[in-house]
Image (cartoon, rainbow, N blue to C red):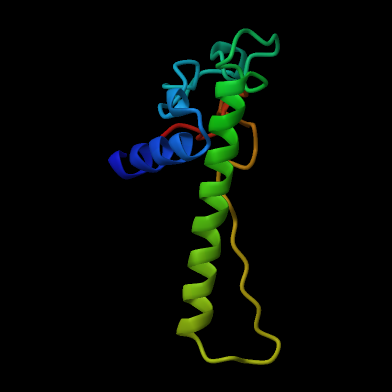
Length: 115
């Protein structure tokens, strides 16, 4: 969304790499493709937009940090909303942490890693 795009641009500029302020073109744009069907996750590295290249690695690190920060904010809000109770703990599942998912037909595809 526009907010995430803005955050990505700001992070890239702050890191001294303003050209990384866009989602890599190699990122998955369809959710029914396999990892090798998009350049970001392909088994054979090709170029800066691959996950091992400069742009791809920056994007995935930024996305990871964004998800972790969001999860921490949600947990802080939950902890503030409920009274402190012995034995009660909160946790959060960060979506997108797995590289691939399987479709009902058994075909592997990238997990939701798009913006």
